[in-house]
Length: 354
Ligand SMILES: *Cc1c(COP(=O)(O)O)cnc(C)c1O
Image 1 (cartoon, helix red, strand yellow):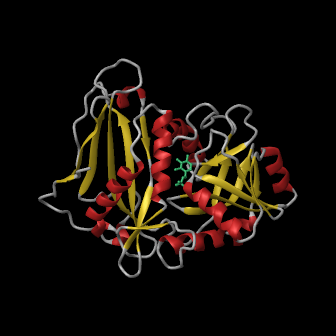
Image 2 (image 1 turned 90 degrees about the vertical axis):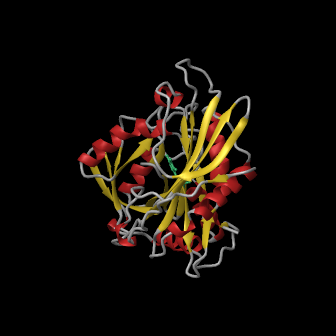
Image 3 (image 1 turned 90 degrees about the horizontal axis):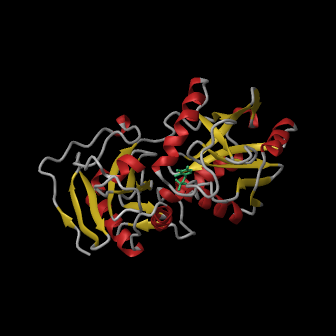
């Protein structure tokens, strides 16, 4: 496959690593590739980053056919740049695409695109501790008609943003509100797909929680509002009486790569990890009798985010005295150690650029 590269005539100045937030600054280029049922994927190209035209009837603007991925490139101490389990993101993107009737991208082709693009933007990977180059591949339905059907045309793009350390002021446990009204997803719906629509539907609850001083909501299942699903846009794990419990992937939960990595690390460390249904009643009981030892969210942006306080129907429970727990800390150290190349990657998760 040929990727045509058009370099920008006016490269931007690289930002100071202390001014990096999340997804506010973008690199000099972006990857674009179009799809039609007749031609398949065509016109793979890297072009200067910037706004582009879209047809006012484009499917994505009306019917929300959009999926995305999120992964990072990390700069090691020796200056080399590496990615963390990118093949998992590629496979998940194809699974999301299948759910939304968007086209598949061949795994090898997707990997070649990702590597070529990251190599092109490599200089944008910051080196200050905890910083990285966030990669955002996304795909949308792009038919220029208002008819409702599986699309015939699509576009795939990748943009990249140098991002700051998630924990500039140290790892502070967050306050979480258990959401008992809105739901994020239902089985049979799009919960397991990483699609923009799931986020659009989540915003109201997130906004309400924020207004009450909480940083995220804990989602319950969409049918009975009984089983724990996720926390904000992260997967969630608990340590209850020595057992690590995380909701099973029943269809309404996003199969996080950080979740999967945490499970693999924990199993290797000898912990009992159960992927199972966890009801709010069981969690409430564990909070009340003190057997809830730790709770944390996990996702690419934060790696792990310890939960220090949980509120349910007006009652407030403190987890591990509001401090980060040993298991959460261990996961953070192990995963970030592998990602930034500070500890040996005995799992084979690291993907060097060449
Ligand atoms: C992306 C995402 C996650 C975390 O997935 P990672 O692959 O670990 O980054 C969890 N939940 C939702 C809803 C997500 O969109």
